[in-house]
Structures are given as C-alpha cells and as structure tokens.
Image 1 (cartoon, one colour):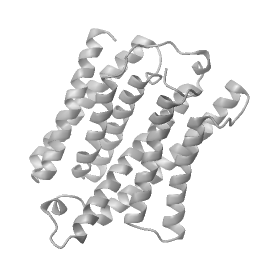
Image 2 (cartoon, one colour; image 1 turned 120 degrees about the vertical axis):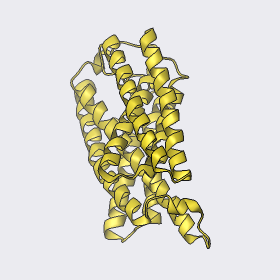
Image 3 (cartoon, one colour; image 1 turned 90 degrees about the vertical axis):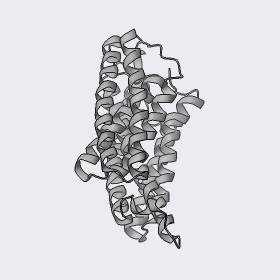
Length: 274
C-alpha cells in the first residue's frame, strides 16, 4: 500500500468508529442532532473509504477483493452503501447503531492482517470474476443489514415482554416495522445469493470443467441459501412471524459469515484467501 492509501484507510477506520459512537449515542440519548451528525460522518467516511478502495484498484489493476484485507474492506464499504440507501428511503437511523459497528469491526480486523497485494492468478482472469464477486458481496451486505434489523426486533421484543420496559424500548423502531424491513432485506439478498451460486457454478465449469465440486465454500453458500429458503417457506406457508423468523435471519447471517470468512480462513480449498 502506498502512503496515501494507508492514511485514507486509517481515516476510514477512525471514521467508522466515530460514526458508530454517534449513532449509538443518538439512540441512547434519544438525540436527533447526534443522529444527524452520525449520518454526516458516515457519508464522509464512506467517501474517504471509496477513495482508498479506488486507489487500491488503480495500484493493483484489479477489483480489490482477493485477499482478506481487501475482502473485509470492500465488505464494510458496501455494507455502508446499502445501509445509507436504506436510511435515505426509510429514515430509521436507529438501525445505524447496529450496522456501523459491524463495518467498524470489519475494517478493524482488516487493519491487523497482511496488506500485500497480489496479481490475479490465471483462473481469476475472466469476466466472471468481478460479476460473481460483486453479486456475492451484495448478498453478504444485504444479509448483514437484515441481521441488524433482526437484532433490533429481538431487543424490542424482549423489552416489550418486560413488565417495565427500559427507555431503549421507546428509542427503537416498532416491532412491526423491523419485521417488515427485515423481510424486505432478505427478499433483496436472497436473489443475489441465488445469482452468486449460479454464476459461481458457470465460472467453475469454465475453469475446472465441473459446475459443482462440493468445494467447502460452494457447500456453505448452499447451506446459507437453504437457511434463507427455509425462512421464506416457514414465513409464507407455516405462518412463522416475529421472533422465530428473526432468529432464522440471525442463523442465516451466521452461515453467511462462515461462507464469507470461515471457509477462506480455515479451509485449504479453491476459495481460500490469498
């Protein structure tokens, strides 16, 4: 990494921390002004992070996603993009108190791993590389936002069942809103996950002569897809709502994390991080 990129990335790390503090404080203190400042800070750090990613792209001559540092950085940036679009449409800043810490943790983890760049290996030098990767990351980030909504729902439900709900109950969006928005988010992420598996299979056939080889990442992607498919089935045909579907989203997010990070870190397979 060149020196300018190091500075930009450090600013992004500090910025995500600051935005997280502002969003959380806005919920705890029920302060609209802090929420406004949180949004302003997040937009600014998003731009700074975009510049860092752009410089990395120019420096390496490829989409910066092939090692752990780049994957975590791109994931956090895209997660914030999805969240800011959601905030723009629905104006529920309280969700930011749960999303921005995830982005901060991803960037913090990226800051402690090796940052050396590598050229593309031959199997990645294809149009399917950016197509498959961007679609996959869109699925991951939308599911992350859905997870944040599920957590808000579970927190609210717990407070509602308490005899004397704490002040937090009155500072978070209503249960019905979180259930609906979480469902909408899963409805967006699921097609991306489907396309991720499909484009990966086509790419695998061109690269290795087989659509499916039960590679650990392929297998975990299928497991994640099945968890969210079960979510839709149980919600639409078994009448599941509320707490049970929120926990299914949490389970899907956990499976997604294993797909995204666990396989690449622990498995010496085709999808491990370089």
